[in-house]
Length: 408
Image (cartoon, rainbow, N blue to C red; front, side, top):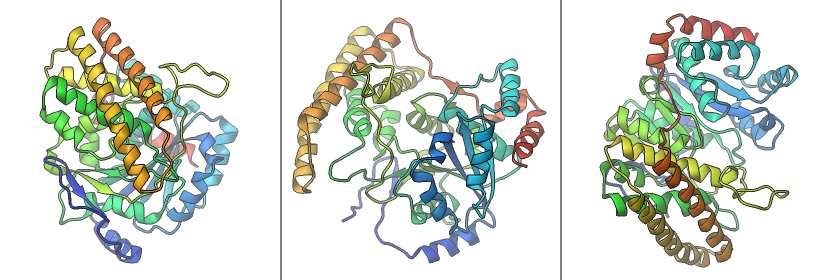
């Protein structure tokens, strides 16, 4: 049963009913006459051959409120790019594939590097950022919806709910973040449950109830990869270039619009993504902070510490040690709650594995605090597109020509 809880700062839009998709589609088609929607999907070529994307395309074929689709890809060669174009050709919407590490777009990145804007950082951050730039170069004003390409339980109703808050003329949101459950026969979402939530609470305990921390703590699933954003706001936000993307994006949005223009929307339960290893592969049994979820946790921690420093918070070795110990205490307390929640819902729960995950994440946090205290750390931020187009005025036309030519 849904609740009615509202956080102090972040508006929460609950799933209180199940309106027919046909009604939502007709609404959205009307709204997009003034605010067209472009869907962005960052992807690796391997996902073209994976289990999720075919199902996503099955649903997108039935969606009439998306004006254009931009698939921003990397890790593929020329033959794979050709196969990707064939794979996405069944989309009824006008669509473009950005080959981020292809020869033509690589020249654009070389130009950006020469202008001291950014080097190419392979990954989701650069893929999404380049998609934003292409959308703006084409003059598309409206809304950008973004979701990952590995959603196994994708449905068109989810996309409608994601877009409605930023497109609806009766609402005034610039940014809408998704939240959902990740449950099968057990709870998933370990980095959120066992790291981000207790870490935010530990930061509040150690450094005080700062407004930015209060805001971040209000998101029910801060690591969700699905959101919608107005193109006006997308122009102004910098793009985090590492695993701290989702949390860093929330901080950027916080600094570039009012909290009244930010919301989160319930996309339902049993949202299924591919699952990642904690910090090692099967042939590499020693966990390391440079791999898997441990690397993600480390970079999230560094991103949060950098964001706090930019708010004027002074951190020393003592407060950072206290932070790690406080995180461990809060995280371990949550194990009991997750166990009890699992028990009454008939789910499997493995206390030892959860405790091992907390130990691994604590090692990631310890590494992050040591790096921050001894070397300093500034989050990798790709400049916003207002600055980029100002620095390289000819880039807008060039970017449009290069990507449109690649897609012929």
